[in-house]
Image (cartoon, rainbow, N blue to C red; front, side, top):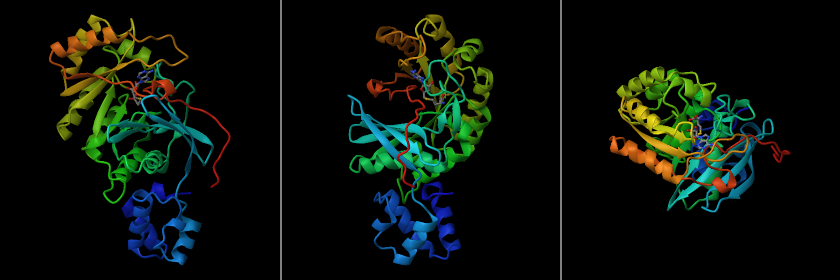
Length: 346
Ligand code: SAH
């Protein structure tokens, strides 16, 4: 069954016409839902009764339910969201940044990549999210914070976005729609471990959004150890990224989780400079966030600063990513699969 949140606006207009309604009604419903946050057809007061009755029967609005919200000391909020079709769960994080906010979005239940330092894949992979299940993570945060607009999206929650490519791209279109949530494509960042053919597709299909690449190692042997199911070598990755840059002229952002005594030495920094100079790019260093099932450690503030300073002196555009929400396990790599009793009533 399809839900309102699975449709782009043009698809929804077609659906309305195919179901014997006027096309402009689709836009009305769209605005009630995305702009005014109406969570039932009853609240869409300018729709005639017969239209509402038909919609109620044929096009349910949403397919997920927020079961729990945890608030961190820095005000970030982690939502535990039930997927009503099968009682699976995902987590998404709303991160306030002054007058605006960023939402961190999940794209899969669990993750098949299995990075050894990340909680998301620790219990395996369950399934891809539908388009609507991706969109609704942002919608739930948006209606909860009506006066604090969501400006940025990072597809850095649970899962590997490029292994759910079709639904991801459609969700981006819906979230970007100017009659709806209107989140700028340039303000969306998709983080991938490096599915090379999808990097090139993404450059064609969504040239205005940003690409972040989880690099984490400077040679394939160590990378394979840290990212066991990584499907690409560093050389393949660099070729795909060069092609991506030729198409989009957008700088790539590398992500590099610093792990004590694993990838944080001066030798690693030297190798890293060589790699990241190959394509116009910047790098975000991420301090390792503790997850329970492994023995990795963060090298600590000072070592991170030294590593960062070295890259900076070599002319690299480098930043250290600020930790957000780690006290409620909402920081990078801490989102995970959970199970609970269902609370869905659809
Ligand atoms: N599958 C995508 C999205 C993952 S999450 C990808 O691999 O890019 C976003 C970032 O958080 C990735 O760079 C990921 O490697 C990083 N990450 C995972 N576990 C982490 C941890 N325990 N501490 C810090 N960062 C982590």
